[in-house]
Image 1 (cartoon, rainbow over the protein chains, first blue to last red):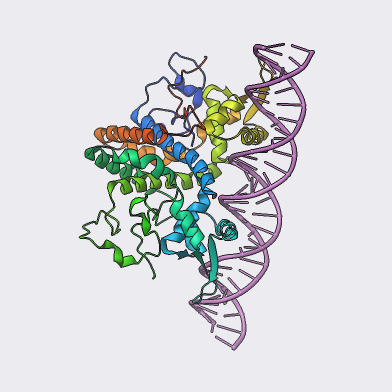
Image 2: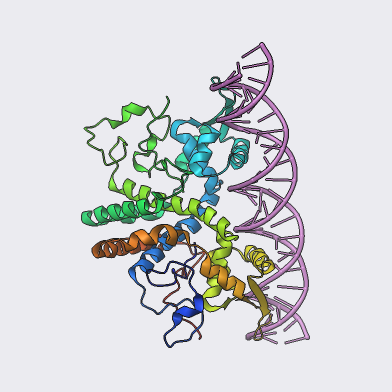
Length: 199
Length: 199
DNA sequence: AGTTTATATTTAGCCTTACGAACGATAGGA
DNA sequence: TCCTATCGTTCGTAAGGCTAAATATAAACT
């Protein structure tokens, strides 16, 4: 998300921000969100996070294009690929979109022969989405924006630096997601783990 | 962006997942979450970044909804608000979208009375987008997903922790964006610094 | 059994975001 | 003046999202 405004006030006032009221001292200078003012650490950390979001977001668009799939489609495929299959319900839970949206996403992936729909035997209300070889191939070869841009650099860092980065990133991630979005309770993002479920 | 596959390396087995098969080696592991295969630090840092992306992405949707504007619209407004005005060209450069997209975004914002279009006097090809009081108000009060979720926690941290986080995040942000995206050459994201402009 | 309630997915209709291509209006040279 | 580059808009098309409603099934009650 953009950035600028850098949360208006220095610390404390996360709130409303009476706008004008704040560049009080001398300096009229319009609303141009402060700048110059010494950024405090909260500002700096937010800016850095936004830079991270931004570069991945933008890069993700070109990435997806190169793969012939959109970023969202790749994400669906990756989730299905974890175990070779998944239900629409599960996928949309993990991606935080509605079932209706998932249905049309799957339509498109199916049309591209990346996945197939197989009705479940146990419960005929559910559909099993299975990945096709083409789909698997797409997942395997799809470049990952983070990987491409980041991995090499990360791995060239000193050991202690890597450790520190990991620790900080995990901390920040928790700060952001522990509070949030029950929509994606598991947040199993990485899948490692993957309790390999119900198999 | 999703995640799974965890970067290239171990990659291969993104598939079926023979489950147990994987924690083969001594596998000390345990870092928190189950995972078996010992995640190396590159993995961990990627996962953390993805968690960050994911929680902001999802949360951004609800945020925008609450504000009556979409996340993209808020971003446009924020850019315009920095100096009270901006040209479509500049905004789309900074957001990394096409001029066509920007045009329709501005149409909608204009319809909502958040911005106005004023033809430039110097060069009649350019339009100055100026923010209205309503627009400014929207920017000022729009909750920022990062702020809301993150600021309080950040500010409750120890001083040294904050410092470390800032330093690491900035490092990571550079690693991600220095390489990239000519689409947005300047990538002035934060803009602070910003010459505070012509004012 | 029969009825109600709950679940899983799809359909239908409607936005917003994006793009590329084509276009009109200008600016700036040559 | 004519040519070319810019800026912004319009058009057509597609993806991704959502809500509400429709379907089909499963489960729980009576």
